Image 1 (cartoon, rainbow, N blue to C red):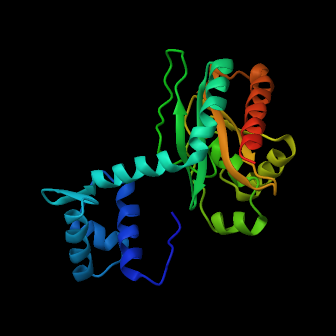
Image 2: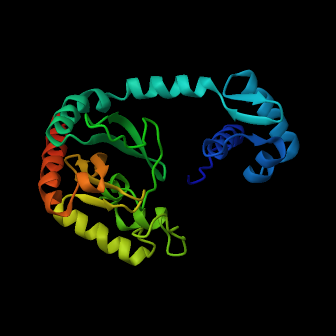
Image 3: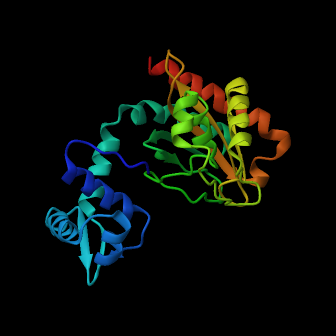
Length: 251
């Protein structure tokens, strides 16, 4: 996630520690202060305070995100009205497609799932509410990014940024990715062709406000045989219809 600096350095450090631990299965004191770049003395004081407040938990020599953050996250999602408004739209989309459906937003430099509705079929897509996604290889990430300004895209994906290859079909060339974003703006939907997870495909559309900015995105996901090439356009039309319905309700 992009580092943000405010006029409250202690708060910035707390958030940096949380960001660092968010994709780690625990970390030691040394790993945290070296990874986050905070002085030893400050790191020690911050970790002790965060443990006391339940923001972190300590197990032997390792620190983990605390359950209080989980509680805050649940409350944040509850208070995010778009989730409640989107639920009937997503439910209808799930019932029409028989596929897993998601609602997501861009948080900082990462898309994040706000809602997941499981497919009624036996195949389970490994995702969850609160999961952060790749910006450039996920359908939802590309749908959100396609309606950013050129400057905003450049800030998220500068020319020297390395796009890690996740699967055989992951786009790793920023120029190719930007060309695809232009196509997404024209056709109205994004496609993840097994780029983020081998064998899993996704169709996503942005939810646009009256100014044409993407305030959220919805997607439908399934394994490759559930979203075959000859059915992709039809499924995309259903997702686009759902995205337009949600946009109308949010006006």
